[in-house]
Image (cartoon, rainbow, N blue to C red; front, side):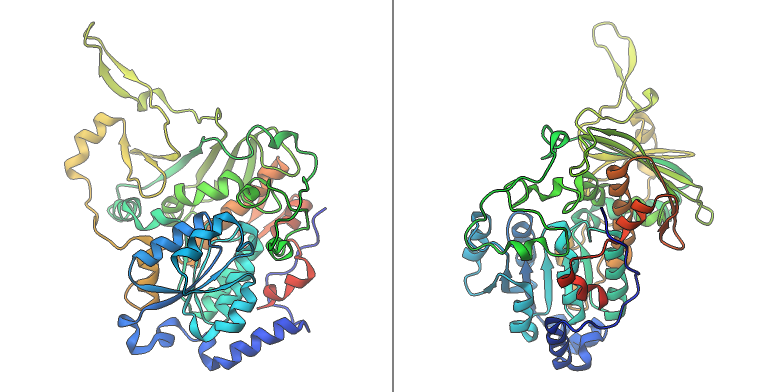
Length: 476
């Protein structure tokens, strides 16, 4: 049973000695800890190299680390991971032998707070929050993998502290610095994308839990690998035994630790629509389908509808999410492509075929289709696009990528494109969607009060109480 939710406002300071210690570390940095990043860097910012610490150095963390380093704007000074002896963390340690290594991110900050300018957080979803809150409280810029946090309340606190601290923030939805970002921005500003009434979003690739998740009755238990800090890995979340079904990559399958297909792919599919259509938070979330529902593991397939209210002159908009290998969204026949049979000479419309994760955006005048990440939109059907292509608004083609954008923002040369003020509300849509995938039914949400009004259990899942040792990060 979920615990009672905690309020989103900071509470009084607990007496935990580690909390006092890192606040002393903050104080050692003087007033700089909560000054805007531009003041932290000062006039030397443009020519500075960013000293980067990395928390979570395997798998996606390794990919992020390489991309940040290859930008030429940073030097890696610290590597931190709860499983430094695991084979998935070996390459990062080999690539950066001069970087200091740590198992515990708190000890890293204790030892190196003065030597770190920015932090990459690429740990499992459930542990983003604590690391990022501590880093921002110490005045460190943060690049955090998607989704931003595991719960709605955690995300709200990250948005708030990012605003108060003034540090540079970036969520790791890499396509948000690619062609789709600049195209969507230009097309909405030009009035081509307008009056959007519904969006279909889909991710139908096979997921890790497909085939076993529906039958899971309890968490499996296996011997803990030597040298791994499992207590630290669990972070704020409920305690469960170690198993290969959790670490190093299977954690995404479980409600207590991951965010399923929606939290994993939604940031790459719905990011530009959410930002430039000013969707905000939905009024209602409905689980239209849950195939193989399980109290512990995400469904084998799900269809979730989000109802967003009217925003200014923008009409109300329904966003419907489809995941599961066979759970394909319906696509209107008239959106297919006209093709002529070379043998008969007859022309017929071939249905649009969904091949990759993506979305279809329906407005009163046009229908747009786009895949995930940076892939640009096309107008459907194809012959309509061909008629319009020469008059379509242009958009910039050469821009810094997502990693360079973050580091250049740290140096005061650009503004980050997916700061917490933008990626936070986007993440909260996923936080709400994951609750609907878990419980089913319809959830009524009050966007002004940040409350689910018709389901007490769902309301408690917005902001579950952390394990006692982790409460201190909620109070920053």
